[in-house]
Image (cartoon, rainbow over all chains, first blue to last red; front, side, top):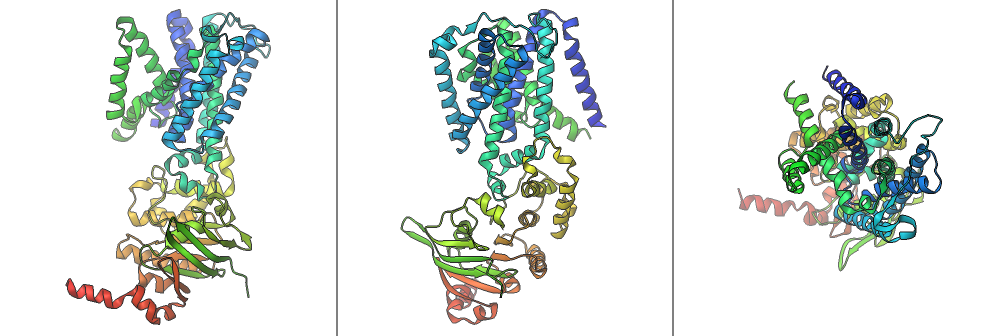
Length: 315
Length: 260
């Protein structure tokens, strides 16, 4: 019964998201596009954080590489958008394989520090390799051509682009969700709770952590590939370590224990940022207070706390 | 005469200047139950850690079923058929009791590499998990979160997880430690019936002498990392040195008299 209500709510939410361009202004179309992209970024992060128990502080490296990959392909090769996104995923998966190979052998704080260090290196490269990345200005001036697969879309139209983002994020979310529900996903959860027991069950924990890291990296790259045309620029800020903090904050804000938590976190984060910065400059102060409250009182996040309360207390 | 399933040859572990395990030799025959006893710090757990791959031996050789497994990582040793329990509970606390066993089973059957199946609809694994829980008498708890069940039930769950990899050799590290007398009796009976079933080869460390004499075919007595004596339960009971050094009946009696 409760599952049916939840599915109903989800269906209403999806229907609402589809209908947005007809009922809301461009302002909200832009905001929702950003929420969806960052939500996918945060959900990919949560595969390694909430499910596998690895706190990475370098996830923006994959997001940023994805942005640059799409921007570069659009500038130099003018490929269809779908092909750009595949290149973004491939590039970030490759980077995640390298960084992950060197990092997953370490635990907890050392893993976090190493991913942070690699994230900074990637940022430094993007910042300084002017001939390819155009340095601090970033890559701009690219235009979206066709979508690919013979689908005729005017991607320059924000409403159309919003729908494209919605469909791609939805597909990516379903794929990530299926991975979380699979036997592989079950092993990831087991690794978070007790990695030693998993290795004594005969599995190489490092390999599983690495595979999760690469999957998460490639989906972050997909989110990055969606971000560059939205911002019309791929700039070093997308790779900056402060950008790596965003999925951490969003996952905690929404709740790491439920699959949709990071999406809720992304929505709350972006909406609050938009509203609060419109009347005060101290957005960071407000965000800090909210986060402190979440960690102290609502450790399961907004979605997690709400769902747990509804599912368990109101039986 | 069958060949030993496990051969330990001069196994030694030194931590800096301390020798935790010193030149242990042991042959374990299939379907046998061997108990390793000795006071705290005798080196039993270090011995286990080396056999299960958690620690690298300083010297010596471990052979499982004719294959040298010395220094292999835990997941490889587990794959080759050695499964162990721990002194402290080592389970997945946020999962249900049944899911705990399912994790081990999916690892064992290679389902853990499947990215797009639906774990909760894997009925084969689920039925098998229930079978193992039944064997340990805890199938009634299958839907409970593992962290909320009693201490003794957690230990039984761990044994279920250990057996689920269908090991050639089972290492149990103080299976009844911390249990109530009632739980100890239940667990001893269970392990006894598993041992008698002839499906398993057990290595058991244990403090409780009743449990040891009840279960073991042979006993290895360790003292300060070395083998003090090895023999049948009868021989161990009657061995004067063992009585003094470990069973310490006289000392224990003396303590009891001093603190009535």
